[in-house]
Image 1 (cartoon, rainbow, N blue to C red):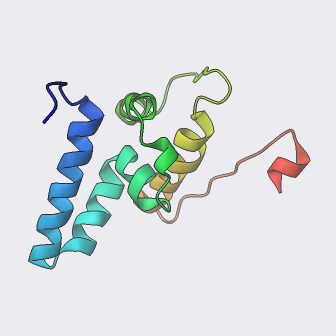
Image 2: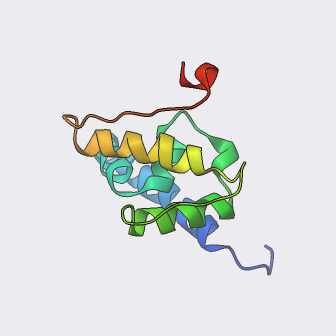
Length: 116
């Protein structure tokens, strides 16, 4: 066993695995998965959206925690290729729809091929 301590993300992913295993044993996997996806943006991103394994890193974890704590009232200025669209536009919007299926959300792009 390594003497290197686990990061907060690694501890969180280990906790996810333990919770999922317990839920499977109890026959409550669907309920637990649903609750985690509604409450935890990082969980939704790496487990719920088709296994976006590229997003399972400390940077994305930290940004998910920041965005999850204060979604509104901020201008999100991040450099290109820093997962803003993945976290906010994809996972954040999906989570909003899961929480409120009656919500209407529009996503616009200045670039026609991207908008399609």
